[in-house]
Length: 603
Image (tube, rainbow, N blue to C red; front, side, top):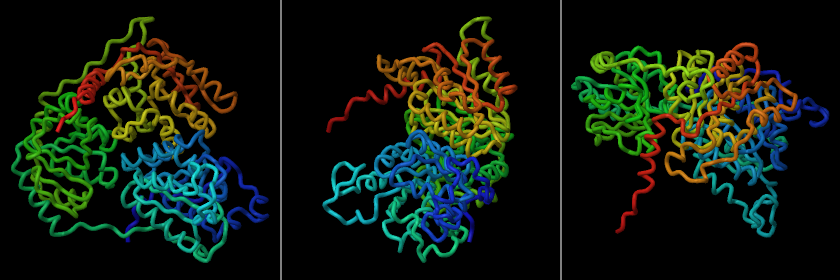
């Protein structure tokens, strides 16, 4: 038996004095909260979350999940983090899972469930394991054909929420009796861990606090049997890939986001060390592979790649893509000039060699470990990179009083980064500017590249910072359009004493959409963003805000965030010209515009 979740994620008993509500013995019949909940479904679920390494559960209360929330409050190893809305709770659970391995959220029946669906769909797209728990209706309402409940669409059949979640989760459990509740809950959790996807668990509100024999003993530590590769298929895959790669003159390796799903980042680095190959990452994998590695050459993104990275990858006579996702964003509109006959593509459950030979039942980690023993060391590609590499010039400083430029802003953000920071990036131009940041050893990074939901970063920053629990300081980059969608969650950051640094980039609208297809709909109402955050603070919590219009003000703001305001949540509204964008956004915008405007093919 092998524990799937890293042991560093297992949480010991912790003080819950900072929880949303301190448990009241009267609330639990005069007993201590833990004693009152023992032997119940709610206690079992709470203990399971603790065993998984979850310490914080993101929630919005509703009439059918209140008993579930009582169970979380009663568990000493958990903190209940109340959010402003369900969408943000889902984003927070997503961000939390990226930092800690798995996340959890609790919402109420239908109105909460439907509201959180976008966040759970994003987690599914990005292969983020989130346990989405819904407080369902009373179990006696199942099987009736004449009762219409509130929070429904006006039909006695209230299965619509379940049907919606079927398409965006890897397992769905509807717990409407106690006899099989334990089995359903544990099966759902197993699915989330095995598949690295979100799961849906709906629990009837009247079952949570009832003692039952199936919950009479404490849940044993959660373990999963390791999944094994087909040995013969693994051997054939390794032999075929070895022949292609050892024949090559200048092979390279490129890491993708599914390295995270497979827990294979260390194996990727070990293969790079053994082979001597130059290594790059796809944009969605930034932050997974250490950028201080001696043969790291940057992000491979076609025409948007780091300097000289595309030249090395595309001129290679063999490339190993490990855990890739080749969507339209990653491939720059499906335009990467790669010859797949030269490729070895390693996916979580299969390997494809030379664009056609497929080996199934081969685990990614097993393949990487076996391959490193067979490859001849070859540093040619990296030597070529070193010969042609020219360091990127720093942008010129702004003149005194000159309006701040985007490239100058990110030059200063680069100087903030260290092993004690983490970067969370929203959809849009921040993608490109942050891809160009060099991450020091220990600096982590999170973005949502495939699903690309505008506004994701605000909730994700809450969750990511909560998971780090003060060990690192989060630096978030979010546009004004994104912030208008989810910005109220700054309130929850303040409630929990987080000291993240948020760069609100105010350029007057949806800059990404402007470059794809401009129109009056891309201009948004300008807010006084610093005043908005000050109003949320309302005299409670440590918060510091500042508007920044030029480089002198930016330097003062940076000094304050890292000095006398380092214990505060720092919110910097950076005002830029509407047309001040990265060159990468201009390139991708024109590419997406062409893709969107293709005429239909008539049969």
